[in-house]
Length: 219
View 1 (tube, rainbow, N blue to C red):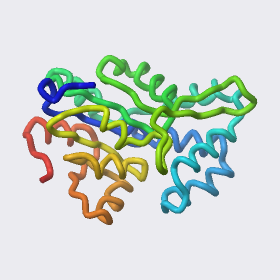
View 2 (tube, rainbow, N blue to C red):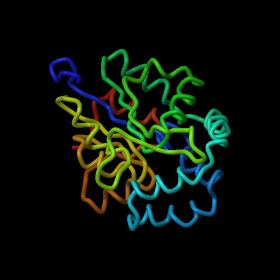
View 3 (cartoon, one colour):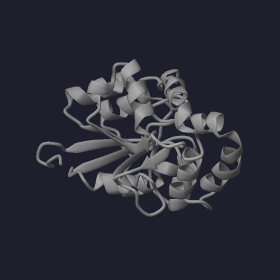
View 4 (cartoon, rainbow, N blue to C red):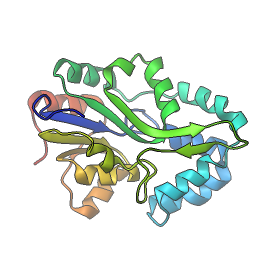
């Protein structure tokens, strides 16, 4: 656990569609389980089906023999502009950068490795996957409520004077509500408007970097 006396700020960031320029995990599901994705994803976005139930059904419908194809798919996904520069800035300021994702940890690790970013990230919390059976099997140390990876619960493992959340979609709602400061884009904006939670809009990580450098955060 990180001590508040050592870390004034901690950044908690989503991965898919946030650190990546496209929805990597969602895109993978659409490729490897298209029919079930078309059925369940709208229900998850509308919050009529829990992320915990929906994601488990989707991932566990994929044959384990296709796991290597999933990793190859992940390796081709682009990162969002400014990410490397932002992470390097945080490193110089001793601000931890924690990845909290509802996607697969193995996909995250491949993307980070490809872009030489793994040493700039303090920790990764995501779905683990078992590949020994006929179909993929998912598990998580932070499975709770409607989430396979309960992001707000992950945040509680750390102590800081200020917590900052960065996200883009339905998986980031609880994390954003828990955070002191929020950077939101895409679908997350509408969700936070409904929750009346303040946030700062961003398009790429250069926007967030500028806000950090100028110390201009939403109140």
